[in-house]
Amino acid sequence: MKNLSIVLNAILLIAVAALFFIVLSDDNSSAKESKGNIDNEASDSCPIAYINTDSLLINYEYAQYLNEELLKQEESSRADFNERARVFQDDMRAFQRKVQNNAFLSLDRAQKEEERLRQQEQKLKELNNKLSAELMQKQNNMNRELRDTITGFLKEYAKTRSVQMVLSNTLGDNILYAEKALDITDEVVDILNKRYQKAGKSNSNSQE
Image (cartoon, rainbow, N blue to C red; front, side):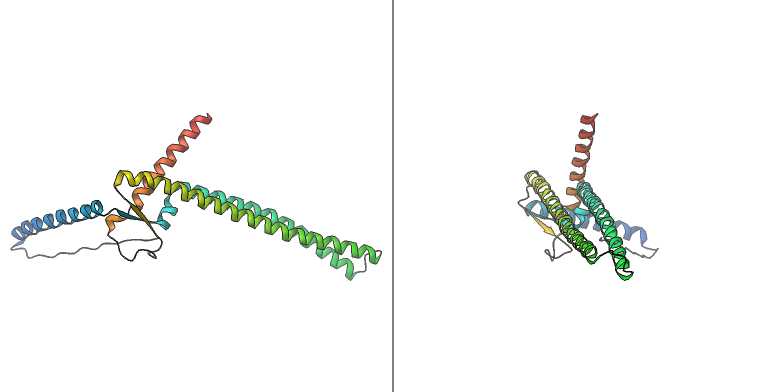
Protein backbone atom coordinates (compact mmCIF):
# COMPACT_ATOMS: atom_id res chain seq x y z
CA MET A 1 0.00 0.00 0.00
CA LYS A 2 3.01 2.28 0.65
CA ASN A 3 6.18 2.57 -1.48
CA LEU A 4 9.39 4.38 -0.69
CA SER A 5 12.04 5.66 -3.12
CA ILE A 6 15.52 7.14 -2.53
CA VAL A 7 17.56 9.05 -5.16
CA LEU A 8 21.28 10.01 -4.76
CA ASN A 9 23.49 12.06 -7.21
CA ALA A 10 27.17 13.31 -7.00
CA ILE A 11 29.56 15.01 -9.48
CA LEU A 12 33.25 15.82 -8.66
CA LEU A 13 36.22 17.44 -10.48
CA ILE A 14 38.77 14.94 -11.90
CA ALA A 15 41.85 16.89 -10.72
CA VAL A 16 41.05 16.46 -7.03
CA ALA A 17 38.87 13.35 -7.26
CA ALA A 18 41.23 10.97 -5.48
CA LEU A 19 41.94 13.19 -2.48
CA PHE A 20 38.35 14.43 -2.22
CA PHE A 21 36.97 10.87 -2.42
CA ILE A 22 39.15 9.77 0.49
CA VAL A 23 38.07 12.72 2.65
CA LEU A 24 34.40 12.32 1.67
CA SER A 25 34.50 8.59 2.36
CA ASP A 26 35.91 9.20 5.82
CA ASP A 27 33.27 11.81 6.55
CA ASN A 28 30.43 9.61 5.27
CA SER A 29 31.63 6.62 7.26
CA SER A 30 31.73 8.71 10.41
CA ALA A 31 28.30 10.17 9.68
CA LYS A 32 26.75 6.73 9.00
CA GLU A 33 28.32 5.27 12.11
CA SER A 34 27.08 8.21 14.15
CA LYS A 35 23.55 7.91 12.69
CA GLY A 36 23.56 4.18 13.36
CA ASN A 37 24.49 4.80 16.96
CA ILE A 38 21.72 7.38 17.27
CA ASP A 39 19.13 4.97 15.82
CA ASN A 40 20.28 2.17 18.13
CA GLU A 41 20.26 4.48 21.12
CA ALA A 42 16.78 5.72 20.17
CA SER A 43 15.41 2.18 19.93
CA ASP A 44 17.20 1.02 23.07
CA SER A 45 16.49 4.03 25.25
CA CYS A 46 12.86 4.53 24.19
CA PRO A 47 10.62 1.66 25.40
CA ILE A 48 8.00 2.51 22.74
CA ALA A 49 7.49 0.96 19.30
CA TYR A 50 4.72 1.06 16.72
CA ILE A 51 3.17 -1.22 14.11
CA ASN A 52 1.53 -0.27 10.83
CA THR A 53 -1.68 -2.24 11.28
CA ASP A 54 -2.69 -2.13 7.60
CA SER A 55 0.66 -3.57 6.51
CA LEU A 56 0.52 -6.20 9.26
CA LEU A 57 -2.92 -7.48 8.26
CA ILE A 58 -2.00 -7.52 4.56
CA ASN A 59 1.24 -9.44 5.01
CA TYR A 60 0.39 -11.71 7.98
CA GLU A 61 -0.37 -15.09 6.41
CA TYR A 62 -2.78 -16.16 9.15
CA ALA A 63 -4.80 -12.96 8.62
CA GLN A 64 -4.85 -13.75 4.90
CA TYR A 65 -6.13 -17.26 5.64
CA LEU A 66 -8.91 -16.02 7.92
CA ASN A 67 -9.95 -13.42 5.36
CA GLU A 68 -10.10 -16.05 2.61
CA GLU A 69 -12.27 -18.27 4.83
CA LEU A 70 -14.62 -15.34 5.42
CA LEU A 71 -14.83 -14.64 1.69
CA LYS A 72 -15.59 -18.30 0.98
CA GLN A 73 -18.48 -18.29 3.44
CA GLU A 74 -19.75 -15.02 2.00
CA GLU A 75 -19.67 -16.41 -1.55
CA SER A 76 -21.43 -19.61 -0.45
CA SER A 77 -24.12 -17.66 1.40
CA ARG A 78 -24.62 -15.32 -1.54
CA ALA A 79 -24.93 -18.23 -3.98
CA ASP A 80 -27.53 -19.96 -1.79
CA PHE A 81 -29.53 -16.78 -1.32
CA ASN A 82 -29.38 -15.85 -5.01
CA GLU A 83 -30.69 -19.29 -5.99
CA ARG A 84 -33.63 -18.98 -3.59
CA ALA A 85 -34.31 -15.46 -4.83
CA ARG A 86 -34.27 -16.67 -8.44
CA VAL A 87 -36.88 -19.35 -7.66
CA PHE A 88 -39.04 -16.74 -5.93
CA GLN A 89 -38.82 -14.37 -8.90
CA ASP A 90 -39.78 -17.17 -11.29
CA ASP A 91 -42.81 -18.00 -9.12
CA MET A 92 -43.78 -14.32 -9.02
CA ARG A 93 -43.61 -13.99 -12.79
CA ALA A 94 -45.65 -17.18 -13.21
CA PHE A 95 -48.27 -15.84 -10.77
CA GLN A 96 -48.50 -12.51 -12.61
CA ARG A 97 -48.97 -14.27 -15.96
CA LYS A 98 -51.78 -16.40 -14.54
CA VAL A 99 -53.51 -13.35 -13.11
CA GLN A 100 -53.25 -11.47 -16.43
CA ASN A 101 -54.52 -14.50 -18.37
CA ASN A 102 -57.25 -15.38 -15.84
CA ALA A 103 -55.65 -18.81 -15.54
CA PHE A 104 -56.72 -19.44 -11.93
CA LEU A 105 -59.79 -21.65 -11.63
CA SER A 106 -61.10 -19.61 -8.72
CA LEU A 107 -60.41 -16.46 -6.70
CA ASP A 108 -59.64 -18.65 -3.69
CA ARG A 109 -56.86 -20.45 -5.60
CA ALA A 110 -55.35 -17.10 -6.64
CA GLN A 111 -55.47 -15.77 -3.06
CA LYS A 112 -53.79 -18.89 -1.69
CA GLU A 113 -51.00 -18.63 -4.27
CA GLU A 114 -50.53 -14.95 -3.41
CA GLU A 115 -50.31 -15.79 0.29
CA ARG A 116 -47.74 -18.51 -0.41
CA LEU A 117 -45.60 -16.03 -2.33
CA ARG A 118 -45.83 -13.52 0.51
CA GLN A 119 -44.62 -16.15 2.96
CA GLN A 120 -41.83 -17.09 0.58
CA GLU A 121 -40.79 -13.44 0.33
CA GLN A 122 -40.80 -13.12 4.13
CA LYS A 123 -38.61 -16.21 4.43
CA LEU A 124 -36.16 -14.69 1.96
CA LYS A 125 -35.91 -11.53 4.05
CA GLU A 126 -35.35 -13.60 7.20
CA LEU A 127 -32.70 -15.68 5.41
CA ASN A 128 -30.93 -12.55 4.23
CA ASN A 129 -30.86 -11.17 7.78
CA LYS A 130 -29.65 -14.50 9.15
CA LEU A 131 -26.82 -14.83 6.62
CA SER A 132 -25.74 -11.23 7.20
CA ALA A 133 -25.72 -11.77 10.97
CA GLU A 134 -23.68 -14.97 10.61
CA LEU A 135 -21.09 -13.23 8.44
CA MET A 136 -20.90 -10.31 10.86
CA GLN A 137 -20.44 -12.69 13.77
CA LYS A 138 -17.71 -14.61 11.96
CA GLN A 139 -15.92 -11.38 11.09
CA ASN A 140 -16.10 -10.26 14.73
CA ASN A 141 -14.73 -13.63 15.86
CA MET A 142 -11.97 -13.39 13.26
CA ASN A 143 -11.01 -9.87 14.41
CA ARG A 144 -11.02 -11.00 18.05
CA GLU A 145 -8.88 -14.03 17.26
CA LEU A 146 -6.38 -11.93 15.32
CA ARG A 147 -6.23 -9.34 18.09
CA ASP A 148 -5.68 -11.99 20.76
CA THR A 149 -3.01 -13.71 18.66
CA ILE A 150 -1.11 -10.50 17.95
CA THR A 151 -1.37 -9.01 21.44
CA GLY A 152 -0.36 -12.35 22.97
CA PHE A 153 2.71 -12.43 20.74
CA LEU A 154 3.59 -8.79 21.51
CA LYS A 155 3.66 -9.54 25.24
CA GLU A 156 6.42 -12.07 24.60
CA TYR A 157 8.11 -9.83 22.04
CA ALA A 158 8.19 -6.85 24.42
CA LYS A 159 10.00 -8.85 27.09
CA THR A 160 12.83 -9.81 24.73
CA ARG A 161 13.13 -6.31 23.19
CA SER A 162 12.71 -4.19 26.36
CA VAL A 163 9.61 -2.56 24.86
CA GLN A 164 6.95 -1.31 27.26
CA MET A 165 4.41 0.03 24.78
CA VAL A 166 3.44 -0.84 21.19
CA LEU A 167 1.25 1.63 19.31
CA SER A 168 -1.01 0.87 16.35
CA ASN A 169 -0.66 3.15 13.34
CA THR A 170 -3.21 2.99 10.51
CA LEU A 171 -2.51 5.16 7.45
CA GLY A 172 -0.58 7.56 9.69
CA ASP A 173 -3.72 8.50 11.63
CA ASN A 174 -2.41 7.89 15.13
CA ILE A 175 1.29 8.72 14.85
CA LEU A 176 2.21 12.04 13.25
CA TYR A 177 5.97 11.43 13.46
CA ALA A 178 8.25 8.68 14.72
CA GLU A 179 11.78 7.48 14.04
CA LYS A 180 11.90 4.60 11.57
CA ALA A 181 13.87 2.62 14.16
CA LEU A 182 10.67 2.44 16.25
CA ASP A 183 8.70 0.75 13.44
CA ILE A 184 8.69 -2.99 14.23
CA THR A 185 6.09 -3.97 11.60
CA ASP A 186 8.38 -5.95 9.29
CA GLU A 187 10.05 -7.81 12.14
CA VAL A 188 6.74 -8.72 13.78
CA VAL A 189 5.23 -9.89 10.45
CA ASP A 190 8.30 -12.01 9.76
CA ILE A 191 8.21 -13.71 13.17
CA LEU A 192 4.43 -14.24 13.07
CA ASN A 193 4.61 -15.79 9.59
CA LYS A 194 7.40 -18.14 10.64
CA ARG A 195 5.31 -19.24 13.65
CA TYR A 196 2.23 -19.72 11.46
CA GLN A 197 4.18 -21.74 8.89
CA LYS A 198 5.71 -23.87 11.62
CA ALA A 199 2.30 -24.50 13.19
CA GLY A 200 0.91 -25.45 9.77
CA LYS A 201 3.66 -27.98 9.21
CA SER A 202 3.15 -29.44 12.69
CA ASN A 203 -0.59 -29.88 12.03
CA SER A 204 0.13 -31.53 8.66
CA ASN A 205 2.58 -33.98 10.24
CA SER A 206 0.16 -34.87 13.03
CA GLN A 207 -2.59 -35.70 10.50
CA GLU A 208 -0.39 -38.03 8.47
